[in-house]
Length: 247
Image (cartoon, rainbow, N blue to C red; front, top):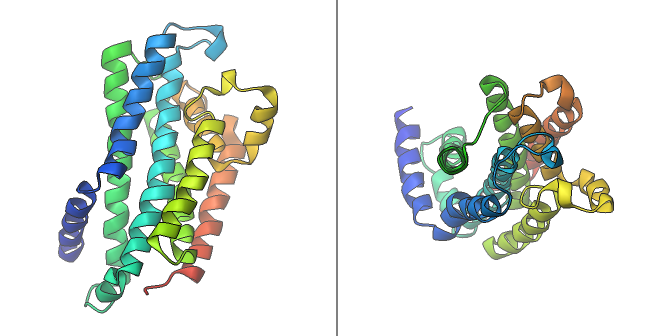
């Protein structure tokens, strides 16, 4: 535990120096919140299922943060560490591989949680954000969604040889997904054919799950999303174990 704590602190300092990751995780969602919040406000409306826009936007933007940290942060961290030889040197130390991987994942998950907390505080102070769901169910769904996307990042970092290739690939997956899944643009304004197509996108199911639980739905209302995200997590974790390389 002492080694894990020290390594976690070091990883936090290194991650803190990455302004791009910090911007898209902590600042960009806030920008969207205030831009669209100034347009739609947060008055309950049938257009958003009887709740306000902000009440649906906060869980949707939280899904976007999960995609950012899972697809881009995890992918870039592991691929760049491998390319520069950091993973190889860490592997040669007395530290166990689980300790090294756990320290990195703790930092990434903490950043994901921080992004959501900031959104909640801003939404509450500026627009009177309301939470109608169960905190425990929301927490479980948030962890499941995060682990599912972290597993995708593991796979991308394992199969891509360089950090530059990882950055290009992760961005190519991330940006179309956040606009087509309902994570940034409300799904209610998407054309019908896009709402049909986006069902193949993993982030769509994160958005649907978090939005539903936020407004008071139960797990039974989102069995499909839970099965898809759980299957993703298991399948991609298995693939990542098979493709993971220290150098």
